[in-house]
Length: 141
Image (cartoon, rainbow, N blue to C red; front, top):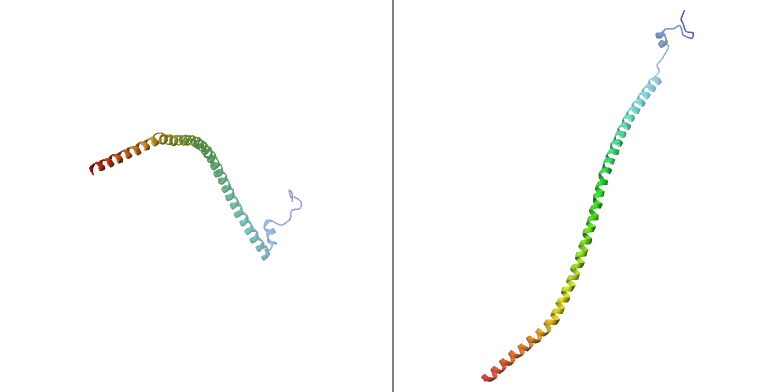
C-alpha cells in the first residue's frame, strides 16, 4: 500500500482490542490504582487546607506582633511615669517625716520650757489655796 509506514500491522484499530484479555488480577490492580489515586487527591486537598491555615496563622501572628509592640512601648512609658511619680511621693514623704520630727521636737521643747514652770505655778497655787482654806477653818473654830 502506498503511504504506508513500515512496521504497521495489517490489523485495524478494532482488531487490536480483540486479542486483549482482562483478568481478575488486572481488575484488582485497576481498583487499587484508582484507590491510590483517590488517596493522593484527598491528601493533596488536606495539604492545601493545611497550607491555608498556616498562611492565616502567619498573618494573625504578624498582626498580633504589630499590635503588641505599641502596647509594650505604652506600658514602658507608663512604668517610667509611675517611677517618676513615686520619686516625687518619696520626696514628699521624707519632707513630711522631717516636719513630723521637727513638730515633735518643738512640742518637747514647749513642754519643757512652759510646762515645768506652769506645773510649779499650779502646785504653788494649790498650796496657797490649801493654806487659805486651812486658815479659814482655824479662824472658824
